[in-house]
Length: 385
Image: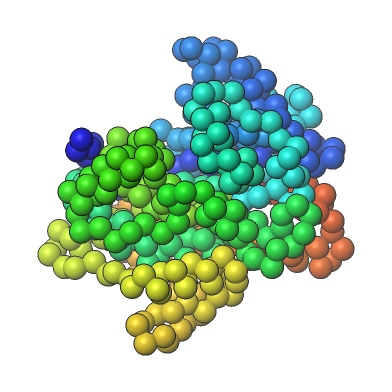
């Protein structure tokens, strides 16, 4: 059955950030999501908070925004929910961290969240789902038609390594340095229907592909297509799912601005009758691996011959090219925060610097929690002024 694409206003924005719940004193993940969600949802219809939700494990919550017009609006929305969540968690001695993977808690120690959907997921997929203690950042950008959504997904696939490198926050897993900037990426890839999307010719082929997956019993609905970037028919968006969770709201909004600007630029190019850039599959896969392994230190393949260019150079040029678009979208400062991430170091770099200075993995969790708390404090001041 063909899916309808619920077209969105041009470049509308939504952000989803998954956060880990940690013991403030010991640093490990704690499975108390249901308690916290029950408290903060008590005054809402059906006892559910509209912006703060369950995830697979009781140690994780997802904070989502409504449909926003600007990155500043999304930041305010996200910050308000995170502040509310943090205040409720702190009463239980629990803090929040935005890292792609917790550096030392094992998935064996975690409790699955209630709900038939989660139970069926684990029963069907088994071990890859049982260890899926990942935390990510998802960005939705509104698109005006299904045809445009597919074309933009094809184009965005070539930019995904930039998002991965900038967000990379999971170098450690089960107490070990994996050598990767984003180990979360490799953990998540063990799930079916994940990874880079196939190149599709248009909305009709996307529907045919979904029908084939459903007929084959691979999926039940489009919700189980977990590509790194995908069209979201119900929301009328392109959803970018590549990123690790970020420790700060500022970093999340920088990536949201980058996504919004690229999608808007793609939309403009299509309106002008110009073809969008498309990257060959071997280059997409190679660059994704390089970003997961080396983060912002990666040299990216830039042509079919195999020439490479340092990732920071690619990002600096892209930000410069997109600045006129950002001016129209009112997100210049947020887009330029992408350069700030490069200059200060992505989360995986900061973590390794702290360790080199004598910190422990317990300290890394405390530092990540402190980064978010400092960001929250800035948002509180901004909302009060």
